[in-house]
Length: 213
Ligand SMILES: Cc1cc2nc3c(=O)[nH]c(=O)nc-3n(C[C@H](O)[C@H](O)[C@H](O)COP(=O)(O)O)c2cc1C
Image (cartoon, rainbow, N blue to C red; front, side):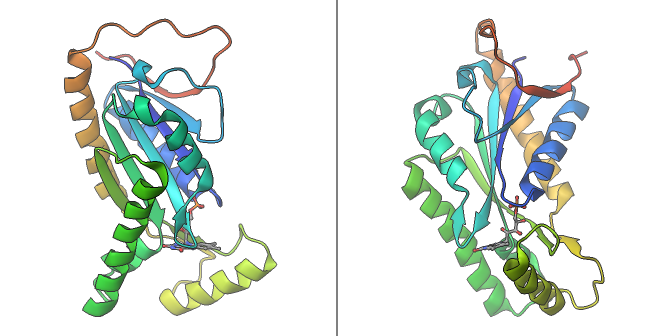
C-alpha cells in the first residue's frame, strides 16, 4: 500500500509533535508514513500517497499561513486522495471542557467551526473530514510579551497546574481519527495502480516504515 502523508504547520512546535504521534500510530498499524513540514517545497505528486493528513495550529483565529499556501498550491491533487484536516487550537480545549458553563463551551464550539469554515474560504478546498484538536499551552516557546500572556492564561485556565506546559490534546480521540483514515485509505488504495517511482533527489523523513505483514 502507498504511504500516508502527514503534513503539518506549526508555530510553537506542538502540531509537529501531533504529526509525529500520528506517524507513530500509522506505524503501529503496519503502514508507512511520511511526515512533512508544509513549508517544504519539494514534495512529489500527492497521488503517490494513499491518504493525506494535514495538521495546522490556529493563531489569532487563523490557521498557519504555510498550510493555507500548501493547500492552495495542491488543491486539485488533494481532491484525488482521502484527506483529514486537523485544526489545532486552544478553543477546542475550551469546547471540550465539561467543567465550563454550557454557554462558554457553545461559544468555543462556534469559534472552532468558524476557523474551519474560514479555512475552506481561504483555500477553496474542503477536506473529506475536518476535526478540531485541542492543542497545548506553554510559556517557554514564546517571546517575552506572549510568554506573560500565556502565563496568565495557564494560571487562569489551569490554576492547579504548576507545569509550564499543559497539553490538552486527547490522544485517544486522535488515534481513533487516524485509525478510521487508515481503514479508508486501505479501501481507496485497493482500487489504485502501483505508485510511480520516486523522482531522483527527493527525500522526506520516513517515520513509520514497517512493511505490511
Ligand atoms: C500568540 C498566540 C495566539 C493564539 N491564538 C489562538 C486563537 O486565536 N485561537 C485558539 O484557539 N488558540 C490560539 N492559540 C493557541 C494555539 O493554537 C495553541 O497553543 C496550539 O497548541 C499551538 O500549536 P503550535 O505549537 O503547533 O503552534 C494562540 C497561541 C498563541 C501563542
